[in-house]
Length: 355
Picture 1 (cartoon, rainbow, N blue to C red):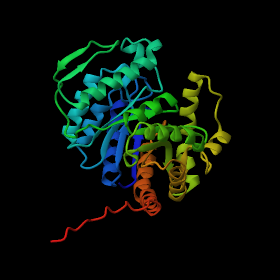
Picture 2: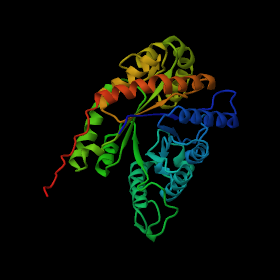
Picture 3: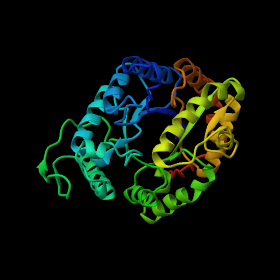
């Protein structure tokens, strides 16, 4: 399996950009990613005024009708506050529209607005996610579905339709650093996405080692283990050009969220640390961004990388240029180097019976 490269976006709403205009820009970004041969386009779910998309599957369906090959994922579906039956049905429809390109990236979400909005108690945060993931996997296993839980009415020999084209419909578990979620993903045999939004990627190495140990202990075949790394990213012709387009919108966004969460303010010094060769943010020239992605591959042996380029109020024209460089200058270098590093699959011996 070749190394996969993709993009993720929260479709941030910057000052002076209407939701209607931002939706047009989102579709343009996805079409370009598809034209460039990138592997994945993922959209996040939020219920805030600073982000456009509350229902990723709706936007992904529009993208599906305008693209031909790129895989389409949520990033993430906040499963704790969703009805898994509706999630499965909607992504099954997306899968049919796209010709088998849909994925669900299931997470607990980094914001909590959806819980009171849909009538859920934050005290049930962990239990809601575990229970609803269990139901989602039961739904994708096939009809009829019989299931009982605490936070949703039971299903008894229920027929859930439509069924997706892919069998099974891909479900990834997305985490920001919670060990119990990592172990749960491994125990269930599910692929894992780790979002690295701060610090140094190397500090996530123990989390990946935990996933790998739990995967092995659960008896899953080693060759089926799949890991994705998701970071903020931006590609300019030079590092200076990338910083000029990305640094101010990025820091503005991070400080806005940081004030809500009690984080200390970030400035240019923190930005330089994050974008240094050992930092979490992949920003710079095509060569620098490729080197950052390859450094992470060396750390994690991941099979997928997803860059979040459209961050904060980065100008749409700058985002489109960055996507173009990511697809034409970064992706070929990364794919070739990962292929060079990857040993060939063992060849099964062929037994020829004598006449």
